[in-house]
Image (cartoon, rainbow, N blue to C red):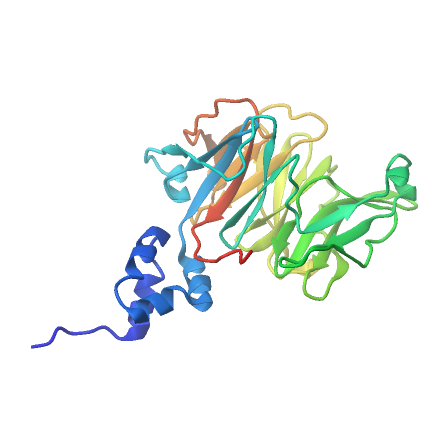
Length: 319
């Protein structure tokens, strides 16, 4: 009697939940599996189920990855780390994490820039006040050999010197604008249509906001509004819709963070525990339901670090 076979759509669901390393081995099982696993549509489906991990840069050149699924940070499970090799390793070069998108981790090195969208300012204007600032936006498409200049951002708008956050086909930056009064704005650049717009911010309720940071949580744009003694985390549930801003929770500061707090929420678990990066110096887990803190047990051997969450992925950068 022949062995029973599973419907192909059931096989696809099972395979889409397996780790990348196993899928690479399973490509050798048969031609149909090889064709499926190498299909870009399957890669996108796999990404939705892929496990998440935490990658850290410690100091200037040491990259460390939390080998366990990120969910283990919120449990009592032992968290192990592994050292990661990367293609450019020069003792005279400093490294940084630019960001992570669709399972691809982008790194930059001070002597080898790798960005594909650049916002730059003419040198003679950068020396003056923000009111005289004009910026240029240049795009480099992979496979070409030149940069293209596209529509400038509005004058008097200074993009902060941080990497943009990719979401919904657009890169989002926090910027500073000076007209009749100074204010913070979020600028969004649509990569397909190559036009920019300003993303509306939430109503902070009269709170004296010292600084803002932006990020991506639960596949939504988020804002971290930092005050003297706490930081509020806001989520934009419908991209571009001001009325969809929702305050997730308030993080009380456990120490004095100065006049420019740097607080980032890296990940929110299903039970509302949040992994925070505080001042690029420490990681803490905050339980927003009962207001308690705990140490995730990740040893930082240097006083400075950068952190990013990434997914296992079959998606190729297609260089």
